Amino acid sequence: MLLAAVAFSLLLPQSANPDWTPETPVRILLNITQDPARTATVTWRTAAEVKNPVAQIAVASPDPRFVTDALTVPATATTMVVAKSSQASYYRVNFADLKPGTEYSYRVGDGGTWSEWVHFSTAQDKPAPFSFIYFGDAQNEIKSLWSRTIRKAFRDLPYAAFMLHAGDLINNANADNQWGEWFYAGGWTHATIPTVATPGNHEYGAVLDDKGAATGKTLLSSFWNPQFAMPSNGVPGLEQTCYYFDYQGARFISLNSNERVEEQAPWLDEILEANPHKWSFVTFHHPVYSTAGTRDNPKVRASWGPILQKHNVAIVMQGHDHTYGRVNVPIGVSKEDAKTGTVYTVSVSGPKMYRLGEAKKSMQRVAEYTQLYQLVRVSPDKVRYEAYTVTGELYDAFELRKNKNGTNRFIAVKVDSKQRLEPEAPAKK
Ligand SMILES: [Fe+2]
Image 1 (cartoon, rainbow, N blue to C red):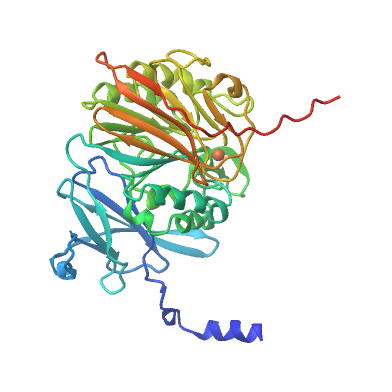
Image 2: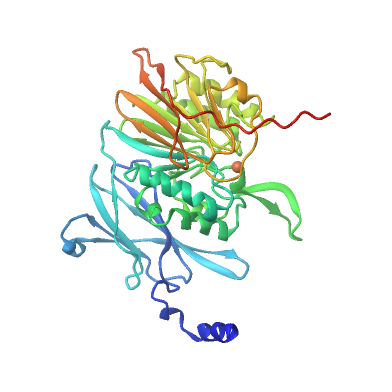
């Protein structure tokens, strides 16, 4: 019976499936751009290469006849092997000359097979309040157990300016099915809220020699550049991983903590020095102050730490350690709430968990075995940060205000929830 059903389904042409054909756009992603007030970039893919990849865009309107005003924009295409004997085609379209603070509607396709019309808003071109979502590592059991995190975060902040991922979005850099799970988990939200992504060590895959043996070298996932279109305004050679963009009175910087760390330091210094805005935020994967076990990233700390402090970066958003930790100190790490200084956070959104190390004592708020997401609200006069457990409990919060001398004033916010720590393992006899 089962065999008969399988045989019958194989006889059906693909087009008999109303939800999907080989030309159907999937994995549609709205990407952050250097100037999100005036530009937007969308990426997507199809199973079969289409002849005429295009997008259409119009100012959104309640009148469905807005579609007749849509501008058609050609897309670029790349076809690549995504798994054993299977290919996919990736497309990219850049929308330029958009109006700031405006809601648009777009669709992607090939002129015959189209996505639905998707709404998004451009940023305003002046300082104005906005909010965004920050996730630590998703990485494992992405469909099964990370989906609940991104979906809960979206329900809390459906009009987020963007979703920021601090690396290790997946576990195996070149596993198409894991990227598929990542897109599945966020579903259509990936098309309507821009993604900001920085690569973790798991976005780097082993380089094999001709015989398939490991060379000891690693390379950025071959999926990263076709499916993400992060800005290419950073250190040459690190396009779409080391970059910056400005959003309504704040500058955001992504650094690539996996390679050429020291080379990115002068660029970081320059971009922060030139920041015309009041606030700055930085994201990268490997933490300046590690939270888990005996892990440590001395090169990251030595190369970037002093620059982040010098420019009074508001929050450095990191991942990698599969725990939660937050510390703000002018120099080094101490338990006391410093009143100024960059705030460093490590968080985790997926189910893979480590145990805390020294951070348990030295950081101001920590957690073990807790899936979290963070909502950050930025306005010209203050920043408010809130970390939530995946079940919606406010777990950590603080505010920052700017002092006249450019430093940030840290304001503690009391939360009711108890610190979530695993019981200590019994001492070995
Ligand atoms: Fe990780």
